[in-house]
Length: 464
Image 1: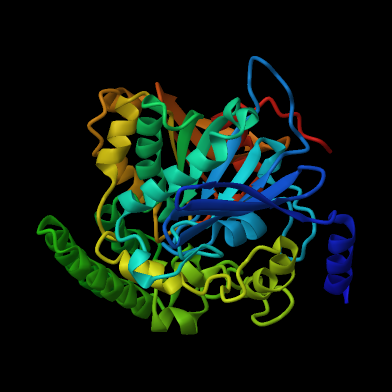
Image 2: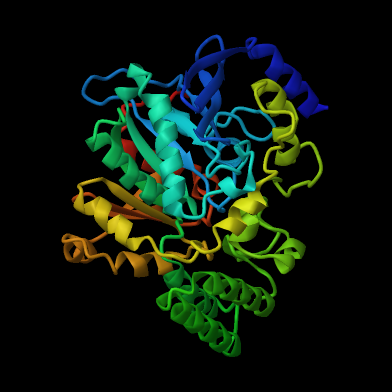
């Protein structure tokens, strides 16, 4: 009854929507809708013929006009590949409303405007009319995203005044670094009119090799697996490295699945997104039965379709997105369901899944782009141990100094308990978030919000 009441209020307070055809440029079209108070807008961009990408933009009510510190915009990229930023990142992590359509006190709108995108095409509400049009590489995904940014930003001078920060989670980190390079190039050539503020990589799948080598030792140290399991884990990790070195990336993806099955079996189904838990204990994680069928990030491409608190109930994200939200948006084609193509997105990217993107991070740093890396202490799938390993492989000229400087503790909300550590040198910044698993904004919302304010240099003054 409470949810039904909230849904009624939601529709009562949301103004009537109207469809606006923004433009028709060659074969690309964009259709958008917005609230009458301009606080939200959303739409489709046909990034390639018959390939349609959905976006949703929120203008913050906390916006502070400061000529010395322009109000920032955060572009949130979800992982998977195949998970929905519009659904998952928005309603389950950082957007203005939670899955019960109640206000989220820790929304990142307190520090920035938010732009959610269902990326790549096929994720969330995004779709392709022909299965041949799914992207096969991170670079192809970046090209589509750059096209979307051109269509959104080039026609809006107001948006062009705000620096754009690309913030990603999990596999979204690979999309983020390839997008940042593509966007940087488009900006330099005059094709894209925006200010690139920086990139933030949250628990990001930048170097699969380093992560698979981290799982066994980490779980052994945590007493979650024994010596025998560690030997089995290390053996498969070595095989994965050999396959990656030989360019056998699809085979490496299959071996990655094999390794996760070993980890799951010998740890009694550890939660890959919080190693202190069993699978299914974390509302944003996987159920153990699903994990045994198809593990890890392949399921991540669908893991947030349900909050897993009460699958099939009123708190089911899939029901929310294909029900009340779909009705609100009004522009989703009748034959398209939210998340209906997400599995295909993962499958087609199988050959790119295990490819590292360390070189892209190096290139961004060399170009002077601000790069922030943050990691939850309790994450396994993208463990901090693995993240530190790939950061140590950077060829960036400032790395030695960065590694040698001391970390600073972070407190939050007047609490003198250590919540995180951070250190920075030039344009590289790192945050170690304590007590958080894979989903940092959910597990440590106060620290995450303060971190975002620092990353974006937001002039925001939080409202009580």
